[in-house]
Length: 353
Ligand code: CP3
Image (tube, rainbow, N blue to C red):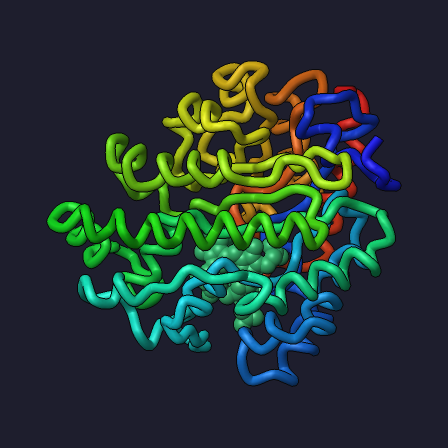
């Protein structure tokens, strides 16, 4: 149906019948895998992995060689957009991402460029084209971007934050400046995701990792509004195939009904909500992706199976579920436990279809 050997992911998003529930893991390509660590050790910074087309392609494929995953996700990072916008990103071993030129004033905002992604981010599109060739239609390839709000938090805070005081101060005291940042980001993200789609990704995911730190009206004004604008402007079919969109707002469970209204095809949910309740609340508007606590992968095979079973049972009969973790896999997860998780989803979900 989608010119793929395994089209479970795309079928499940469109709530068409599947044999078993498809499964993939956020951050599936990365630090918990010994084969990733081996490559990582040869490079002194993480960004140079993302910018090396052969390496980024290889890392994307690593988890697919190990596990029976139903989707691949391009190896990259959400922060390469602000990097391309001139903020000078580097990754510190201890503190994570750091911007050398964070946004501190109106003049910084005025300087932010809108880019042609085939120029500044050509390495991502070249990686996508290469992965596409190597995947040989086995499973769909997912592209992604951070949400404007989530990217703005890093650009204003200058890196990761626990309290988000700089961005919240800006939001409550200079909302017009923040809207200017979010508008520039929205323009760049639309161009970037459309370039990813033209290069060959078969679905896109929007990571709104920090939407959940907002109150309801701020979430609507500073995050959801821009996500809606992005979705309205994305290319929705490529080479005759529909391109589904997944929206994940971590901590956004209280707003699922509103998130389901903006034209996405699936909602990613974290583990703090019962997936059956989420399904009932969004009805037949969208599919659901999620939602096992990644920390369960620290436990035993039996405990992992039990949790998979509970989630499958909560979701209930029928299609419309893409099994995933409720957030990215932790870097100290035993790789064999990730394997048990994926096998359990396939084995235990058959009876629900
Ligand atoms: O899912 C995948 O496997 C694709 C690759 C991917 C990465 N980051 C690779 C990565 C994706 C989809 C992301 C998204 C991302 N990046 C998000 C949104 C999703 C989420 O987890 O909430 C965010 C907030 C970031 C920003 C980011 N990147 C941080 C805060 C850090 C440092 C801390 C950490 O989590 O490792 C990164 C680095 C990063 N991105 C690594 C990887 C594999 C580790 C870098 C290393 O190996 O040194």
